[in-house]
Image (cartoon, rainbow, N blue to C red; front, side, top):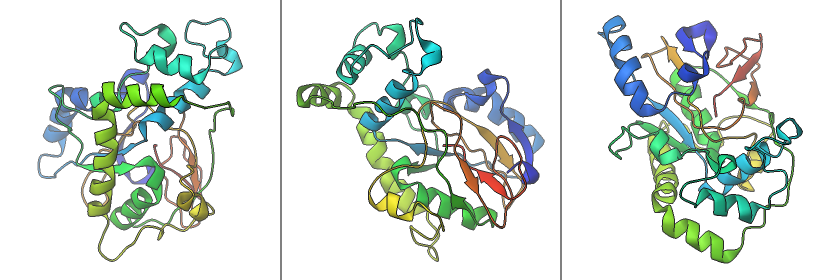
Length: 255
């Protein structure tokens, strides 16, 4: 969306990965002064909690982290989740919280438009309608495959100790459906991954950052996106970009 944006905050990491409460405290007042006559809106994609943790587990198992305290290469997924549920958490499990990331600091969700990451076609349809672009999804930035068997007992414990993460994800399904334009339906975003959505697979990785984009299309829009990895790229025949790197004919949506 760089070609359409008034501002894109993707460096330094402290700005790119700013949670909602810091956006409200520091960035929203700034944009409010600059764009006093326009209303800013926020948007986020939320990943199913077990899948979100599995993404971090796989991402931190990459070879360039060998020997680092954050590495998960020598851990099972159960051990990683046990670390996440520990207090304090070991370095490899310090991956934050999606619920806190999109909240205002007092526990209230501070993002207006929530979508489930597993239903990214709904988010894409929403953006297509609001920004008047056509997008085709392409799979990028996928972490190495690893065994992801989580014991039933540990999943039960995760749901019991982190209920707010699961309720946020369920809320995102309701909010995402409400945000879709009436004239559009899930699946209207044309892409090679249409069948993957039905299988509940996902085109890329997500977990803990906020990529800030301000658009002058319709109304300025701030897009905060939870994720653990670089963003997936979206090819777009009609092509204006939401990309961290502008490439003619391609679009990137922050996941």
